[in-house]
Image 1 (cartoon, rainbow, N blue to C red):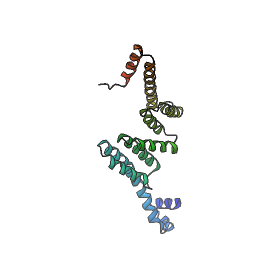
Image 2: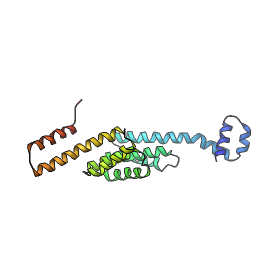
Image 3: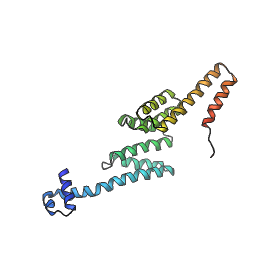
Image 4: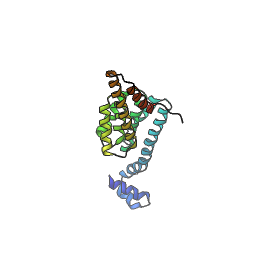
Length: 195
């Protein structure tokens, strides 16, 4: 097949002899050669369109569009990964936490070199109060990507939430005022800020 592509490329530059050698496969090869980049660009455009649909609240349409990209055999592998990741983000934003967790866990198993699935799965675990699982995921991603700023920030936030949790449990055993003050100080880190 590569030979046919090379011959098709040669023909597209005016080499008539290559046309004769390519024979009946020429048109098919030339069509694939010319159309494939368009299909790849279209798939990337579809992922961007899905993102915009989700931002405007049309999550069902966005998810359907991403599913089309994911199952399309002509989509580039990186575009499919991006579509699968975007699907997880949209599911999470739509409150479909179990489905999002599954999507990120699947990406993590298949592409352990990607940092984003670790981070997003850790965020889900942290929101569910499963701090140890979240910390383990963030630690694993930071071993591979020590400068991944989002994971570093999330690990800091996680430790702060773990501190609040520990102080609250300690306060149940010993209701000292200084524990309440510590909880309040750390809690201020998570209050919305105005700009």
